[in-house]
Image 1 (tube, helix red, strand yellow):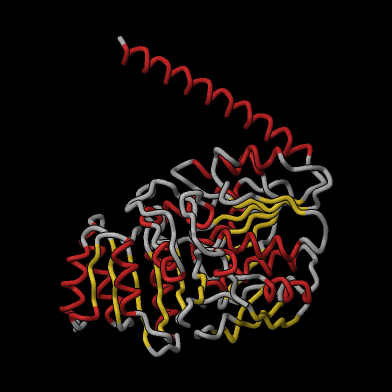
Image 2: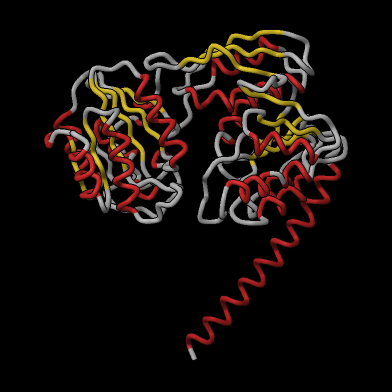
Length: 429
């Protein structure tokens, strides 16, 4: 009887929630039509969405009031409330839109109906929800299919699947890339630590010919795609070149996205919470180019690796890749014995590879071996919260759970309770 009543209550709450969501969607669609004076810009793509969004907002703020997506509210459940926060005095609205399964982005796009749709890339992420890259591309294309009347697409010309989306638009798209004669192209791209990413933007095609030198605070060449997408869109909206330069120069590193953190002994940790294979390979590229006396990696499990549904295969793969780049490897979580065996087979010395069950032991090992000129890369699935390994090199923290169900960054979690000034520790002057 109890379970029957509980099931009935859950069903009642679910129906109430769905009615409320349906009501919010209807209101959001109506409100979006009323906001005809606001230029709505929507960003999607497998990688680089948030960076593109934040850069673009900083560029557009010089032109007028900008409405925006808050935090990571980019799915079907939060987009309606985001739209309902839009006001007539907003000159621009920049929204990040993410797919969570087949048809999810179509539902979002039908509400947003963007005036400008940006597609950064199609890559093998969220592979559990999609069968292949073509499946992912079809989902991302929904944002272009649902452009507002006279809307324009801003497309990555270097990504074949994104470039093919131009056939879905009535208006000639604006393109960006490093090849294929795009309207905005990047050249002279470099980012070898301790140097940060810099490049030159070359405008042509639909823009008056010009070149813009960009110097950023971000680490890694892979950010150049987001730079291009944001700069191209800003230029299309009439933002002066000087403002684009200043926005990129003043943008600090993003939290837990290849974020450099200086440790008290002089070592530097570069921390990233994205555990997808695409971003893992980008991290390896950064590590290969980096200038450092010793390179250390602290790695949890990865995801979105094609054909590797089992953790032990992913561990072996990660160890084989890391063995070519790093002097010391620390693997954290379950299945690390497979990583250690693979690392030893690849020639790593026994005193330079560790397989540890949790972040606390990883923190202690790092503390024992840490040297002043080390460059440490920290990456893993968000449940492990390996960011705490870095924090424990700075001072004591109150959180000690092995696996956490909270998906927000540790910085904003009440359980962290650091016994030091976290904001000051993370500031890179």
